[in-house]
Length: 585
Ligand code: PEP
Ligand code: MG
Image 1: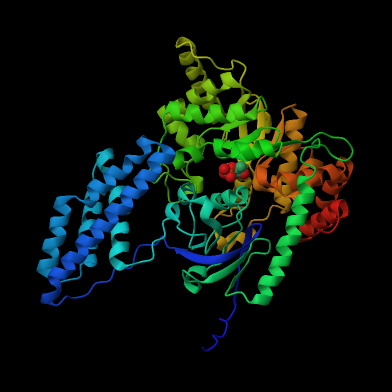
Image 2: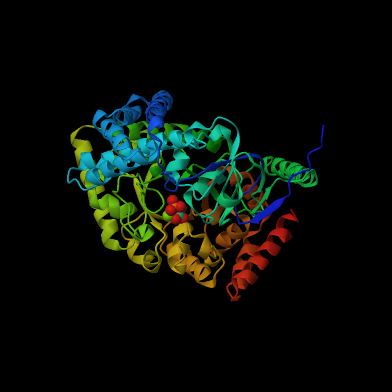
């Protein structure tokens, strides 16, 4: 037997997005339009081409039915109905007849005929006034993509149906992809695009799934089935890793595991600095399914409940009772610790695919509170559900993307109207419920004193605040190097917000991704933040750090770095402070 020589190692460098090391088989997940082949058929193969088409329809039918069962079991019958609509599209006799006659009249291969007819249906429905008919476009797109994949014989890559443990390789991963993802089979993911605060990366971090983003050409270099190694600490991906490299990484992974054990050992200790200042360590969540971990990590409640997670998982606008059940489950699990429920922040990279919140410049478009104030019914349904859940525990409401006083006032007015309705219906809620605002738009940062008249508390959303302050799209890998939390403009703005909130006696916490990073946490505490909200998987490390840091040293650190004009030098100083505090790790 001849010995096969090992394949050559290829190293790709990107942005470290979620820590950890993964080694496994790559699965390419391509979202771009399919490359549909078009060629002439000899007359004698026409019948077998039609048979090929029938087989593909059968296969697609079986797939859709299997997904339907899965969704019905996990999300309920209501959510599964969408797949009945898909089956109707798949077997629509008018469409199928048109494909057959196109094939017989042109003698072209069936995928090109099907693609042509499906595109015609898509353009027709897109031009309809009727919203219901317009929505059918998404169904036709989904079904035609699935059918074409089967016809072309493409390796299927539906993230909801992973069959083996895989590392996903994709141009990009959207939050709606991650909502469908079979998380138990996902070892890691890497993408061509993306920045450190995209929502799919935030999800990866919360699930402790290693991720590297901003690789530019991973989908061109890697093929499904390749063996790859993902280093989420340093942002490196190795294709065909050598035995030597795997050994080195194996050692690194075991060192990391030991460190994790050290961090987790302090989890039941009080959350306070070495010189005795209590620091609230709360969790960012997207749904009730995360509460087991939140409780296990001894979190001081939920500092940010990103409710759009529920909407993405339901692929639409869930009813009041569906929402209520989810909020009440979180509140019950939190056991009297505060739960800050943020109202719907749809838009940006979190869209429902219904066109409702999609804009060319989506991060600055019809997003979050803007969308809710423009869709009062959706907003009121959510506020009713949140208010009703407040009867069961310690609930606070928080509005995202507040840019000025008028928006905050209008949101509060609607909230009051909802309260009047609930009282009239004898439905209980917490009459003293507190209402807060996210500070994530520079205009809000500049008017904390004005907003303070309408809000009980503030939470700083640094993910967005940095992108707007620096004009750096948080998803765009080409400008990711400009996304600098240590930029003097960011540091000064954070200081202004925290100083102002403290002066006015309004609690202020930080819930952007930097809150979970010890090097930035030391700065935030030094500036006077007394509460941080982060993904619960990062909580042990942060608690370990906080228990070793002195608030007086953190304050001195702030004074020092505010005088440094170079962000790289700031990061170097913050790293050095971390090492001074907990040693080299
Ligand atoms: C933020 O912008 O910092 C934030 C916490 O909100 P999100 O990441 O959901 O936009
Ligand atoms: Mg935000």
